[in-house]
Amino acid sequence: MWSGPRNLSTAMMYAFGARPDCAVWDEPFYAPYLAQTGIDHPMRDAILAAHDADAARVAARCSGPIPDGKPHFYMKHMPHQMVVGFPLDWAADCVNVHLIRHPARVVASYGAKRNSATDTDIGFAAQSALYDLIGGLVIDSADIRADPAGMLRTLCHAIGLPFDPAMLSWPKGGHPQDGVWATHWYGAIHASTGFAGPEGPLPVLPGEAAALVKRAMPHYDHLSEQALKKDMTA
Image (cartoon, rainbow, N blue to C red):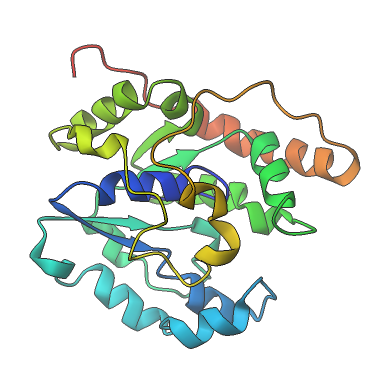
């Protein structure tokens, strides 16, 4: 599952993690991304200390045995963390799904956790380019929040999995596979036990935030055109 930040991606990881047949992995390329780019992110030192920062080793694990002997492996990835030169050949053996969210919501949510955001931080250009490179399915977080059962059933049908109602809820307090960064970014999801309801009107953003949204919109629109629609027969 490929997505930018603040995009329902952790909730989706928890949903698949609630399935007894599915192992999950939280942003395995985050530490390699920080190590390679030198970018300053919240909890940078803790992330590099706690997680493998070698992109080649991480990629090998992506295509290696699934943890705990499970038949399915949900990997939560962010396209902008795939620095040029990082192995991507493992993705050819995966079912690739691209999770999107309207840029205005992403920028507003990101700004609540970090003072400034760049085009790279929110990852829309990288996600659009990755979709063009590897293909796959697209699903919009707004559709999931509007009808979690219907859209998860549709997604499962599209990727060849039986839908499991266990995906609709999870224990409060986080998941054992959360990255160390969870203490900074995952406060709201840790307080939840399921998907939040439909979102309200789009936020109205000022200045550079509005400009950031405008630059991201063509990439979002490109992916949105491919988004799954609820399958009434699934």
